Length: 406
Image 1 (cartoon, rainbow, N blue to C red):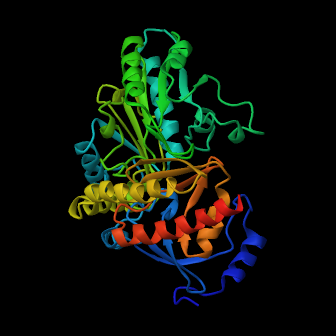
Image 2 (image 1 turned 45 degrees about the vertical axis):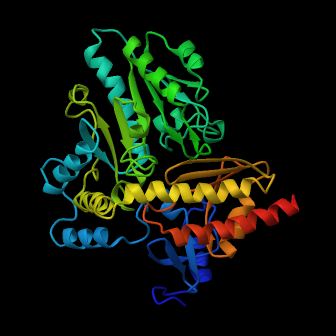
Image 3 (image 1 turned 60 degrees about the vertical axis):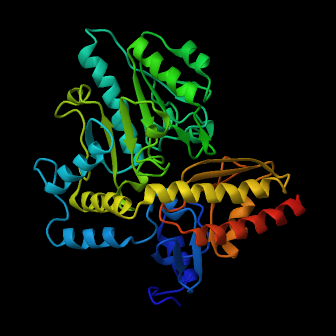
């Protein structure tokens, strides 16, 4: 047993069977302790986590500055509603804006951030259109924007819509990286284009530079807002503070979550100054959004990234991952493509990728499979070269076995 465990993994699994709705497919393991890129289960087995917190633990597990910031904050204020001011919320907003643009609204998750951005886009044109109705939003095939009704409607993947109809009206879908298809969908009622600069759940698909430039020009020409969903690409994940900074394209609204507060639940959207007044008092709110604990954690996360030079480390370790996987691709015909932007890494196979997850877990490495055939990694920004090599060795040996079995 690990010292942090109070019962075996099986005892916890049995408890879940009695009391927890079984909507998640869980692995038969109870995790009890984490430190950096390693995590331990109840029985004391250590795993190298290359997908920590589904991308939320952007500094790995229990980063020291974040832990200390939460401990300090919890002694003074745990929660204060947004009818009052708090120092931490102002400080975190200032830190985000200094590294990006505009003004910030805080929520608790990526889906909340995207819901808020969709509402803001519609409100902006309702407030400023002179009576013209602009409400349609164009999003993209294989994108993912969340699970609540607006964001799941924006998620152009039929598997997420099954049994949920009718969905929110006003959404149209285009193929990713197809500018002409987008142009054909735009009309006078279109208020916004929403996309991930790198599609995560869709398989680590990277937007073409010309495609993003064309979307920006189209939005300017047709008076629409360009919204970047940076729930995964934000907070240094791509090697810059925010994914749009890799592209040279400035969005009007940017949504954030996952790694925003180093593993603490936190979401936000950032909008250009001239758009912010459209979110009038009473039109949108979030009870726990901007709470002191999340704000303290977010400030500490940004401090850690700056003080430890983690943007540079992200770029270097991304190159190291790519060197490993490109070399493996030259040897294994089951590898179709390797795609990476910073610490967003996808290895596309021509066979199902899901078996690799359990095989790697058995050998002490945690990874993810998405979009049926893509091995996906979202490692911590502070991962070391030795840990990259350790993880890639296990993944390579696993894929070699799968190639033989195919």
